[in-house]
Image (cartoon, rainbow, N blue to C red; front, side, top):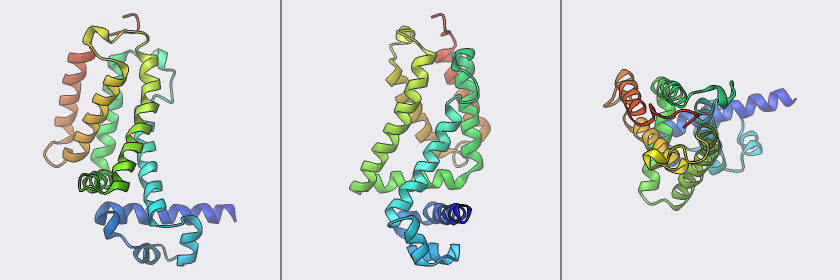
Length: 202
């Protein structure tokens, strides 16, 4: 029974993810999700009270996936040199975004609706950014203890804000005006220039 419920929820989120990516929040109907999943409306509403809750669940999963790539969960942070950390994590993120057009489209639609002034979208963008920022900030503070970034006039929060801004640029341009290889080349140049001289002993 529990497995069936998990499978149904996964099927709903998969259908919703594709719908929201291709048509946006307002262009995706609950009826289209019912049709795609083959589930009843009652079954879908059992898992999600409404379309908004489904939408935030889809985007939150995407944000968690991005954090999973950026945060070094498989190895202790102390074993990484900063330049290595930024190089490898950035390139992994570029690969993921280049391979997953739906992920990019989800965030493009979200940002467009926020730019159009939808209050709920503006608030949701802020909450996602805060979630990513706070989780990544914890890791960056371990990578760069104390004032090790002051030589570049960057606080830990400045660094995270810069990273999130670059992420937005990648989402908007990757595989559209910038190829995967071009993005990686730019990323390596940026990291080499800004962080090449910083180590754990700085």
